[in-house]
Length: 338
Ligand SMILES: NC(=O)c1ccc[n+]([C@@H]2O[C@H](COP(=O)([O-])OP(=O)(O)OC[C@H]3O[C@@H](n4cnc5c(N)ncnc54)[C@H](O)[C@@H]3O)[C@@H](O)[C@H]2O)c1
Image (cartoon, rainbow, N blue to C red; front, top):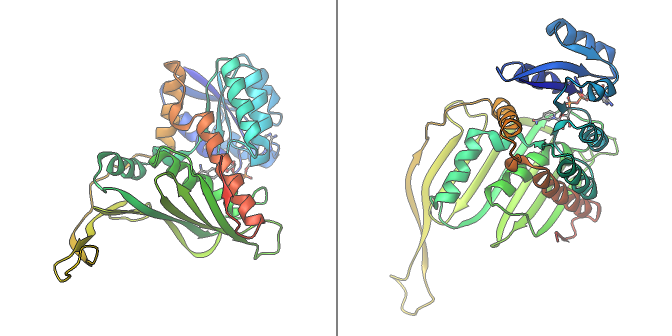
């Protein structure tokens, strides 16, 4: 039985409490929040959980094996650090930290204390995203030319980070996972519309190795909730729509062929679009948050590094976010990612 303490019981933390209490091999013993109203509401739902105001009580408890951190982004680094130093395994919500150096330090601490540190890149546990990965890996799409992602809604607004840092960790972690690499270059624009110091939306063009160009659009100022990714290959094209009731994946058997039929010289050709069928494969739904928690527990039990969402993967995401932010600050200047 892995005993868990959850730090942060705002909007998201209670989901982790629910999930970790569903398994036979884990139990949430404690939770912490600075806000007493949040504690009271958790206490009502889960009377058996010891709800405390000071997270340090969780870290000091010898009963707790692992902590789950679901607090605002600027607290991720100090809380993860303190938890690792107390010998706890750590699951930290995305993004792992605000600075690359902090991520590397946390990775080193996890190594030093022989504890697991995993980041909440929950879309890496989404069955639709796993299907995209399979299409790329198997060559079903052929050579990938480009892709675009849209993650929009009206709210929820955050006051600790802008829309880029709130929403884009998902898309960046997805594309790093799909292409098994980190981008080399970014160019981005953002806009502050609502009178705060935070960007409410961002458009980022990101170049991955092999000339794969990605566009990411994130916004919390949009009339429609959209969670979509389109990938264009030279054999097939695919759309992932997490909110589509019929199925999250549509595979388009469409591509473009070159023909020189009507031309006399080599090098002259016509482009012909080839229209095939659209397939909606059966993707069995599994709650990504549950799959993510299961993976975290399994890695602890089997003493394995949580490779899929390791501290290093979290570092890669933070590296890209910082490059995008720099480009936004410089009005779209291209920023190289070393
Ligand atoms: N994976 C996802 O899809 C997803 C979705 C939503 C939020 N998140 C992440 O979860 C985290 C929390 O988001 P949220 O929407 O729940 O935020 P929130 O502001 O609603 O809740 C954060 C809570 O943390 C508490 N808190 C702050 N500092 C604390 C401290 N030192 N000790 C104890 N409690 C403290 C606050 O009182 C608050 O109740 C963020 O990192 C966010 O990025 C992830």
